[in-house]
Amino acid sequence: MNMLCRGKAIIMITTIGLSIAAADDAVEVFEGWHMQIDGQGMVTCMVIDNPRTPMAFERRLIVNLASDQTVTGGRLFSADGTQRGMKMQEARTYWVLCDGPHALWDYYEQEDRLLTLSGGEQIPGGWAGRKVRFVSKTNAEVYGVLVPLTRPDQVGIKIEGACCGPVVFAAAGMSKLQTMKF
Image 1 (tube, rainbow, N blue to C red):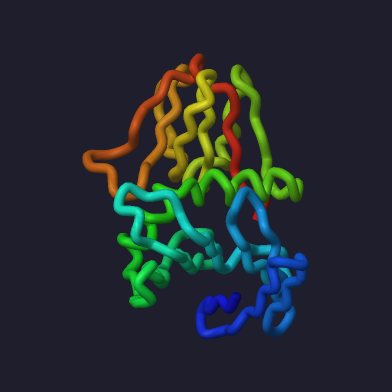
Image 2 (image 1 turned 90 degrees about the vertical axis):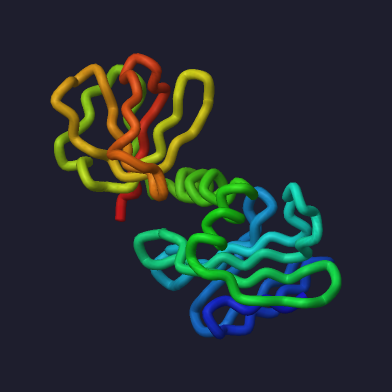
């Protein structure tokens, strides 16, 4: 199988578990996603084959990530052999639909690249403006940018594409809050 991430060809021989990446990049498989990892340990591209989507015509989805881990675009391969580029918003929609954010944050958690607060801990002021993963006590996950609020019993998260300011959550409903160490 061949993948193309940001113009770099990555050869993957999945039947015997070998991965060969261009330059210093490595490829790891995590939660069904093939993740291209650069020399600094940052995920630069994520690929999933046969993604589960409502339309069910997609054969492969490639999502490119910027250094701040936001989606910049991607490529979609259909079951009929056609392929096309995707702009940021479409690629992000597919990425979210296929649990890409969950896989990315779980990967960084496994690699000890996240700072984690448990429910009930005070949120450090330095976390404001940083990307976070909010996990509720019911295990629902929300991803966005932490927004400072005047009430300490609330957590505000600006979610990409959401209208009208941050979404506010009760701090008492938080199981954990995470941000990336980088």
